[in-house]
Image 1: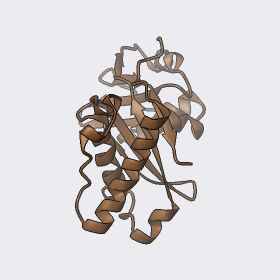
Image 2: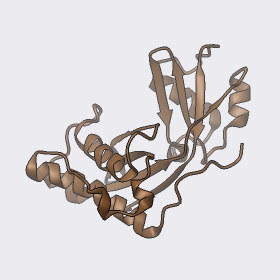
Image 3: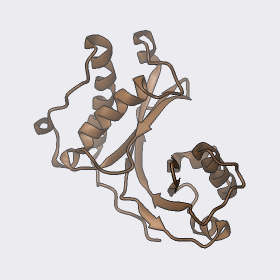
Image 4: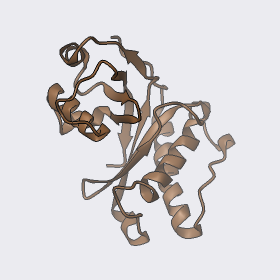
Length: 193
């Protein structure tokens, strides 16, 4: 598979998105309401519909991560909403407290359009994955999960990457079914760190 297209963001675009992510959390902590990014204040790149994930780290440990796999909002709005959700709605973590905010680093991943891949078995899927490059989404019935390409940093072996994705979706690590479907995507990722 060829490298997928992600919005071509400038350094200023990336800095502005990181500022918006932080502002979104600061605004809620101060006013108890969601931050409203005015589209006209941002470049045309940031006004395009795009999918994103916002990840929060505290002392280099995951502190929250929420995002969308499909482009449903202008990118700057998507980042603002996902930053809020990562800080206050990730069910794995308590809400971010005001005194924590200075210790939190924001990371943003802007996703390409996902591409469905058809495979006959797990071996074929593993052979088609590009470690460190591809994000992967697994779906079957009500079960679904995704791993961003950054997850390859801690799960470097394709088999382990896929096994842990199955666990995240609620399946045993060795589970396989003809009913499973997969999508791959790539990201442009950047952070305050």
